[in-house]
Length: 442
Image 1: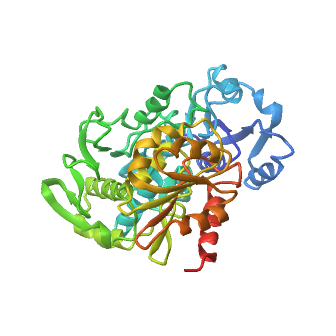
Image 2: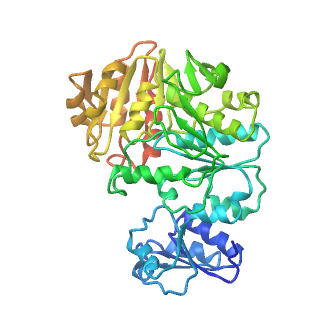
Image 3: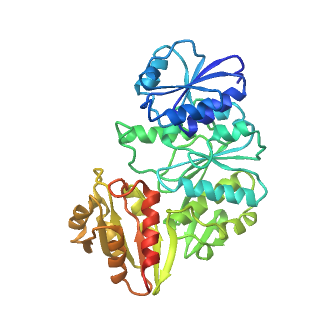
């Protein structure tokens, strides 16, 4: 793709937009960026773009573009149905996403592993990058996690492979993008504020397989059987029929090959065991030997707030899973625990039906401490299944949970919904949980 001499529009003033704009400029294009947000609030972004000699048009003016653009590159946070995007598409200007631009301008020159799914994709992407680098395959996690892929391409740094986390928003705008290995972690309802129906969300995710050929590999969760055009390998911590499976604490690969003892890793829960399986299968798919992966897996620590072991006090293990912002994530965390669980859950009321988790709560939880806007509702729903009570804040919830425990139990903080009723985001929520744990005696 030749951009020299072309005029490119970039939509969005965030990290992805700036990375797209800088990459296009580095290839000789003239770039104008657009963001229809409040002009006053966007002044820091205007200054940031100007520092790279790129104009950023904001406010209502961003909704009235001229027609003299050769191409429009949109950020994943912008729907193609929004007015700012339609201002270009209605004039016949082709729109692609940041992922497609990176792929066209250098991404396809090296093997690509793309990872998508509702939950677990960030841990898997991060772990996979660690495995590859440990085996001498230079890579960096990018895309929806880590660096924007366009920034990786613009840097000119030579990599042996691209490890790219992909959200449904990023996959909506691909055209030719084709991963050599496509990893499908799982699927569950989410982002219904963006999509009109669950099938629409799934279709966006499934585009990761759209351009694969018979020579490419799909690594998919066994329970979510997929029709894919190329080779397929499955993984599961809950089925003995998967290619990669969990057997009494051991991860087993194809041909019943023992790959490693999962219980000796620094990870927690069977869902994280599935992340390990997916990462190992993907790395093997581009030629990395299993024995070259073991040390990297054994020394790996999960990203903060994702089933993160915090402390052990009085024989009680504390797990921070603040990143759990939907029911599927909460369910996965619960099913991944082998010990008795005292669960802290709840947060913002966003229309989720926590009664869908009645069965797993009844099987796994000895006590539930419920917090946030939806706390009282969850308490009422679960009280017939398990001893439940509400707490006024996270500090009180941690103290109550600890009172309910005995040695060998696990306190799992996995809210199952978003945090904005009490916190600025899941990061602050997770830090507050860890601080409350550290203040406990025991």
